[in-house]
Length: 145
Image (cartoon, rainbow, N blue to C red; front, side, top):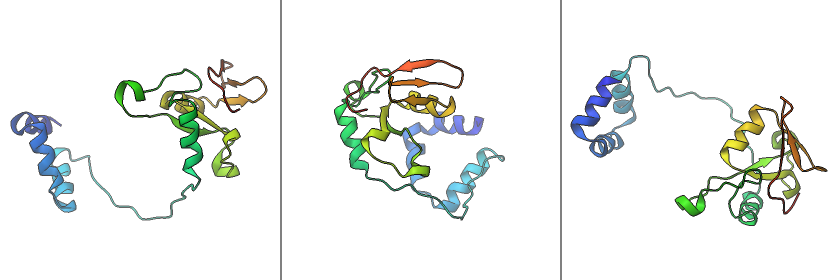
C-alpha cells in the first residue's frame, strides 16, 4: 500500500490512473500483485442468477417521489445532479417475481441496506416498517402503497 501511495504522490493520481487504463489484464494483475502480495485478481467461471424485471416501473416510481427516499425524504439529485435512490421489493423479487408498483418502495441506499440487514418487515395497513430489534419506522412519503 505504501508503494501505491508513493506512486500517486510521484506520478500524480491522474497520470497513474491513465497508465492503469492502458494496461492489459495481465499487466494490471501483475501491477496489483506487486503492490500487495495478498491482493490478486481472479477470473471465476460459474452460473449466475440474474433478476430480470421491467426497470421502467421503478424509474416511474423514482419520478413520482422526486428521487427521494420514502422513509427519510433524502435525495441526492438536487445537490449532486445524480439520483442514488433504489427500488426495494417488499416481497422478495427472487422468490415472487412480483414487480408491481404495490411491491416496490423507493429508498435511499442507507435505508435499503438497513431494511435488508435488520430484516425490516413492511406493514401495508399501517405503512410502517418493523425491524428485528422492535424499532418501527413510518413512511414519510406514500403516494402508491
